[in-house]
Length: 451
Image 1 (cartoon, rainbow, N blue to C red):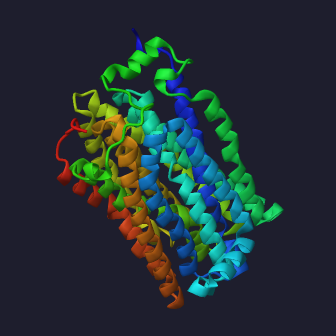
Image 2: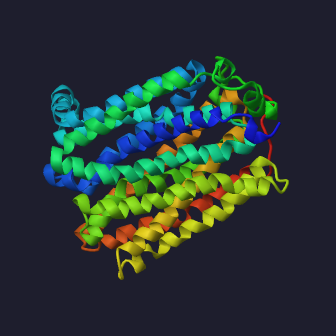
Image 3: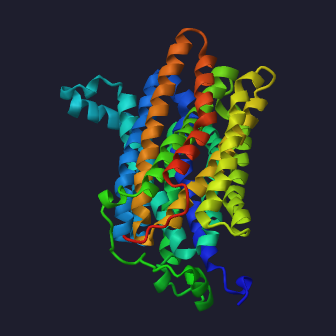
């Protein structure tokens, strides 16, 4: 049976994952785009902003560990539904950050938390709720991809849905500053946050586990199952975390996430501040530069997902093909080293080279996620992605807090550009370090068969 005649309903499911990821990144990026406005309104320092951002990352890191387990146990349909409900509520309540902060300050003042500014406290709480829900997105999406796609298509499908992160990052600067300017900063959190409930309606209508899916043809279902994997998406099978930690494959994925997730977080949370600090660009003026930068990342995500198929067609095992592609991808972020020197000519030049680095991250990420479904049975995928997500979140906290401290220090000294040079240097080399660590842990393809 020709592949093109088997049906394409799996790509409908992939489109749902794409839009969920788009909304996910819209919600998390609103704060960074409003940072210049909010720091002037509330008098935040870079370190205070870093604390707000790192609460999201720390909560996200811990929640990822449990989100993977939650998705594995509850099932993809219900698990993803609850995740987007929680993160949409978390996004909306940012608009109430001041009264939330006042109440928390009164309640917890006796343990010292009241010493924090009310605005900082309120936004920290809102970010924690947002992170709690958003942690479910990628474990659920990767698990769904493993359920609805054969191995040879998974990195492409992952690249497609992961490009939703880039679309979200493109749409956010085109909409959020305008909303804040015309309707007030609170409106951006409320309107963007409400999109999750719209997505939920379509998810409940169109998704079901593969074995129970009535909209898919028998031919397409057989094609998806052509790898011979047992589909366990509808079961409550689970694997103990400590059992997963026995495998080098788990540690390889976690190390890759730890080293590189923070780079993406840095770009996402600090680029609006960078454009303001170094080039005086803020408000609606940042719309076009950031939209151009994140448009570049969309191409990286999709093409990065396709890249391993070039090697697979030449006889490489899925994992070996992915690692070969990831090595070449890891070289591209070295271009970020040129961001600061090129900035003396035009702000567009650092925007472009940072865009190359961010694009490479998305290509890397599409393949890194897919290494899990290459090597682990479906019943463990959500949990392994959760472990890696926790590692990535911890790496993100370290980078965010380090960046905030560096920027405050060098801003006081009158050389804030030095802080950005240090951070860009780490971003440039992180992927090669991650690849070498992963390769040393898992030199050759070795699927897990004893879980």
